[in-house]
Image 1: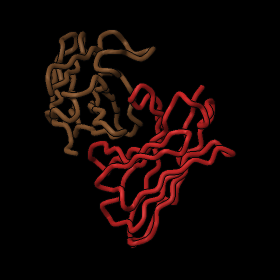
Image 2 (image 1 turned 45 degrees about the horizontal axis):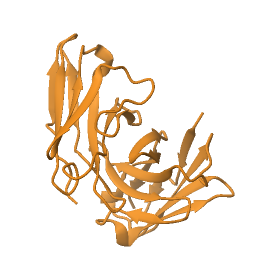
Image 3 (image 1 turned 60 degrees about the horizontal axis):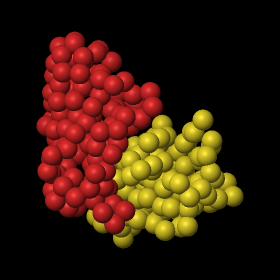
Length: 110
Length: 118
């Protein structure tokens, strides 16, 4: 059960879009439609922003969108706002009631 | 409104057993819809899934930690507990409990920092 691969950092100016990648394997992302994304501000608990690859929980702005192709999932944040500056973690179901997280991407709003 | 609150010792000595409790309010852990789980985050590092449990008591563990873990439910107190045996400095982390819904962690507690040190 290896961790999912995420780039360590990404950045964008206010109003721009940023897309974060999350690469797994045929044992996790490639096999299941259960990829979720979490936003974590410093000193705070993670917050679910995307589940089932592209679904947004109630209250999450539609600026957040998700997708998947093969073994790679992506999170796009459109119309970047200062409050979007945070760490973002992907997570995939890996079968047999197991889960695997990525190492996280730090998003900086320039 | 769902709330999860972790509690634990704060400081544990190496080789001892770490015990954590998550008190759930606003939902019943005996319900059939959700699972309940634990995730940890070492200081300055990423998230790691530890364990998940269903109301039936069926439990599931991270293979890399399985031999040292026990997750359990106390339905009378609406609590989810986690025990980690033979701790080392590598177990120093913030431990979060969370509700599992459609195979995602949709609600999280604030976390409990546990430091392993003599």
